[in-house]
Amino acid sequence: MNKKIRTEAVEHLFEAVLELKDMEECFRFFEDVCTVNELLSMAQRFEVAKMLTENNTYLEIAEKTGASTATISRVNRSLNYGSDGYEMVFSRLKKNQ
View 1 (tube, rainbow, N blue to C red):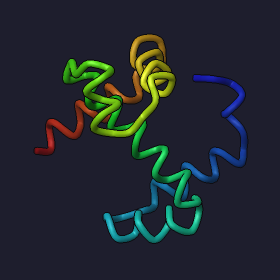
View 2 (view 1 turned 135 degrees about the horizontal axis):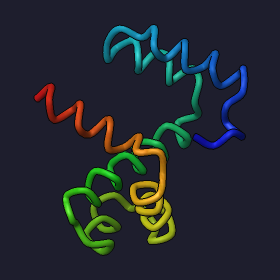
View 3 (view 1 turned 90 degrees about the vertical axis):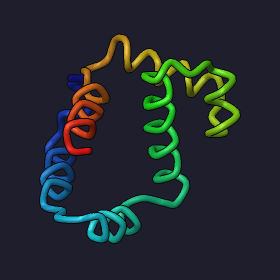
């Protein structure tokens, strides 16, 4: 994991997120913590990652999500060279379906 994000403040934020119990609590918390644009950007990147793992093309992803090719490329780099966070979450989501 990137050492730059391993700060006490980030740990406190993650501890708070782990206390959320359901979707409604997530909406309430993230609405307070993030701007609308920050939250929509994170959701967009997550959707891009999902579509990349489903082998959609950059064009298909850009058309469906509105993400730029630069954003798609950054997410793709995270999928290929990141900390496997997306893979971990997608795997768990599949198990729970």
